[in-house]
Length: 377
Image (cartoon, rainbow, N blue to C red; front, side, top):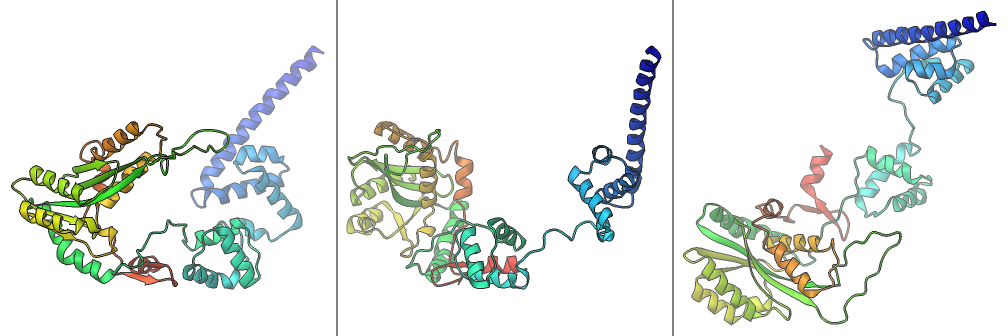
């Protein structure tokens, strides 16, 4: 009995050594084959040899690294004698699209109309071409044709692209160059209104979505600001009532003191309280040049980007006290030339969104002709 037990142990040791040897041999064979062919093909060839030798699937997977599913597929192909040649081809296969010759037409349809979801595209394909496609199938179609779900931009309905381009080329860009050389102070003026408990409800962790009670009274904080194109410093006048010509004049006086001795150019829009007699007369008295952008051209007033930045910061938290809300706004606005300087430098630059290169996609949407040509190339 003892001898048999010892023999059994010895047999196990021999089997273990044999398996280790097999692993070393297969490893060397794999390394050799990979000198001439890809690793995937090397795994398949070795797996075929081991299948022919009657090695169990689990052992083949262990030795070659090929998954169990692939080993079973190879076995079935051998048993059926099912076009063995295809086993020695890597790549170029994959799932064949059921869209066939109509794929180009589908892509053209997507490019010429506005589709907001994969489901809409799937419905369109079934309705127009009679082909039922899953949402994952739509995803593969989009990926193959480099079509992405991109955030839409806004185009003011009454914007005049020609006037905007002319203003940028002949007025705004030359002023930017003068400001960069230190010859003038260039500022962008605009007002923004922050209503507590309206757009700034924040995010709350939980198993279900929360609804926060908003305030019944008017709790609005108005910030009239002038953003320095070079330093990114913001000069402000604030209140919780209204912005009028009185606040514009107050800001002009503050700017005049802050930039004493410099030629000041102030970019602003065509709001009525900014184009009144009191503002004109005070600006002339203080030696401030008022430069009005073309109508319906918020893209030309760079301080609009600052307001978007501030509101983005505010949306991450809920404020239940108006004084805390005000302090946070002031802190963000006055950090543009300090801790937030890096982010603001990326937002405020000579790069201006202009619309003179847009081409119509359909009646209500447009795309950049320059970008479209770049993608086509």
